[in-house]
Length: 217
Image (tube, rainbow, N blue to C red; front, side, top):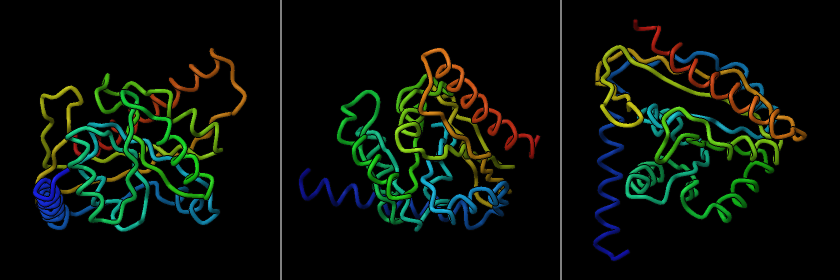
């Protein structure tokens, strides 16, 4: 990456943070379900947040300055998220199911075994939308991490006509952010049992989206 490209991406990150901060700061954010997450955090348990691709807009602002690790696709869109996140003290690991994941897997496992927190988008970067891929569950099996779904919705919002129905929220809105109940995945599952667990967690994450939306129905 050339010097000018680095400058351009830094500017993109600054502008992204400016827009997100303006939208969020002028809105009222209500947080639900945080108690169980706080208990897990105090117990220094490793945590994997699962967030659908379509519910990412609030994520960089909401989780800012916590030094959380995020798995981000090594794509152009991923670079935008990376530049925004780095300015808010995220640790970014680049990798996805459609790119080499071996090095990223090692880094994520090390982070979780230290009791860290990780954000994974289990239907990214190309979908299918709200189809939970296996990687996050296998990582939880490997590290004994808790899986915590997370979602948000807003009173003043718009769903884009994109593959993920990306949710945009506007300034001066009411927002609800919800932590789901922590879940575990047994390290000893056969193929059929693993698929049953995958579907259970997929339903829980989608149900959290519906719960968030229901606050403004």
